[in-house]
Length: 555
RNA sequence: UGCCUCAUAGUAUAAUGGUAGUACGACAGAUUUUGGUUCUGUUUGUCUUGGUUCGAAUCCAGGUGAGGCAACCA
Image 1 (tube, rainbow, N blue to C red):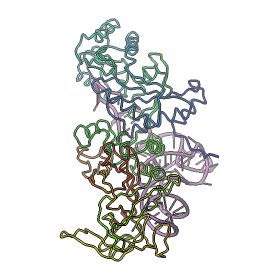
Image 2: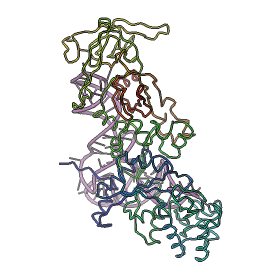
Image 3: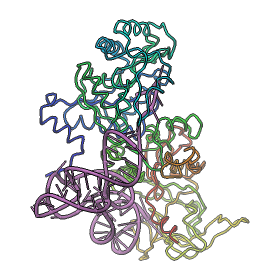
Image 4: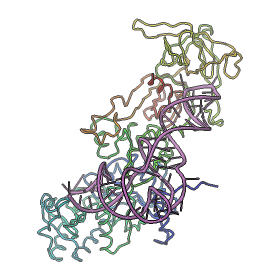
């Protein structure tokens, strides 16, 4: 008995279409990125939607690059986009390019000219803008609007043949300059750009605009449900107009609200600025909301898919709490990530009644949530490193860690009692002296003592060194895009803290990039490609939930 | 002072004329050799004013608020 999950509005539309036999029940969607940047979390929602919808209704999804503007598009982006989609877990039915259709689109344009529905306009950009009117005032017809079909045909052919410089002429649809919808005021279909295209090279010097490429490409591919974001709602009448006048396959456009995440920007233009101006190390900087950034940060594809599922689909603008994304990755990694011990900010701890030079091997479970993850050995000795935060000279009431006279358990090992400590001239604690209870060993504790706290540790003589990169949100304000002023002035100066020499269990010397762990009590970490055999590098994916940190803030 | 969207707890998202529910968050407690996990409980909501109806979050009308639209970008 599976519980009935309610359908989102797009699923309802698709189910209705299937019920009504529209397109014979066939479902074909498409994901149409422009190859001018890397995919980000907002695209992930769109990908999950388009591919997910098709999967659910036995359909397919095309990957189609919307590459109609040669000056911003590059093959590097094509490759990264393909890699990211596959990493997310989806496979397209066909890899296609709007540029594959340039010849066909040209013919479509000729058809419209012949029908008297398109004309070549010699006006300058500012003249066109001036005649366009405003949202509250109708536009005026261009003086070139009534050229003959023959003249338009010749001029358009000459445009294609390269007889004119960039910007000298455009091809426009003849719709209605007085339309209340600005997009219907004789929209541009083609412009002249003597630019090298990443796929067609120099074959073309005229390129179709989005409005005359996207819908026609959908139609050529017989896309049944063309799903895009809300800003294209006013384009839909034009989308339908072209299809109607061209009498081609009637694809239909549906719009949903794009994903917005707080403390994040999701705009390719803004992300490009962060990259180009050095605010981050690249598109895959683990602080970036790009899929390549999340991947390097340690996010799993399934956690992002789960997130996309949970944020839902609607037509109202939204600002999702980035905490939900963090919940999704914690939820998954809690079940799958092996636990290890690592100390970020070490302070030395000496156990005075444990023989100097003696070691013992302790049994440690790899994952309390997964018995099949097995056990490992950790080496114990009289000199350890513990986390500086786990000791306080004058601890408050509910501090369940180490302080003068306090007991605490060393994870997988013994209960210890703090006997004394030393400080340097600057007042920093340098060494903590403890005694241990031999009968309190984990698994065979007969001491009868109950301690409230358990802390992690590494043996000083056995620990390996690792670099650890601690990330925080990239922006210090909830909605950087809506703030006054340059969004980059809200970049969080503490978004990256590097710990050059953390101490970790020696088993971590053998990690491969992408390996994920829970550093006990600290968070989830992922090995970075910068790792070397003698010095692993870890990125903090996300912290563990920390109720003690919250408690501290309250006091 | 045009056109188009949209409006349900703090944030998202259901309820499709018939008990306003779920997730995340927050708060409280239990469990715990991770202040993690898990479990239990609590809290908070239909923008507004009318109308239709036995009954309205849902349908209708007016208002208010938010977002989008005037790139040779997509």
